[in-house]
Length: 168
Image 1 (cartoon, rainbow, N blue to C red):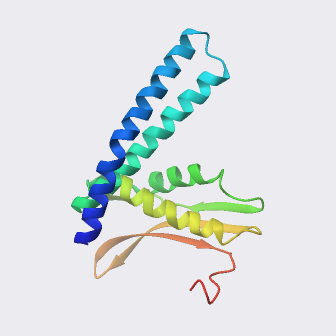
Image 2: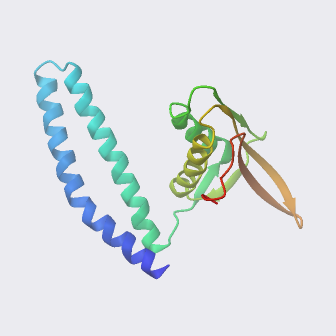
Image 3: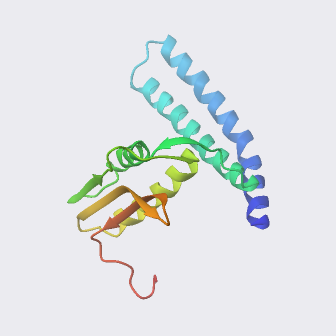
């Protein structure tokens, strides 16, 4: 963990300066294009800025990993799942159905929204990759009891082919 932490911190540090320069240049170009009447190129410049902001958020997550300090806040499990799935619907191949099965009332819990969304996003991406020929991806939220303690369970299942022996 210490090595991973040092690597994450160094990577975040090394990427932040060029990212800031690229964002500054893109913002300058977007403003120049806006003054010239906008058009489709302005929309592309705005898209570049949005994606650079997204990269900055990813770098911040890696930097937080280096400190192993999650930023806890009260979260709604159903909102977390809905947000992640809304971003993945475009990545789903033809013939893939995404089915959320969300507990009611929505389970609330303490967690780090960015880190949990990233983990859930990776599970969903893996499931979508396993269903290249179509299938069903189901993400479920549920509250269970474990020794009289409430437990939140978020499960990701797919009807894909699974891992072949070599990948396993």
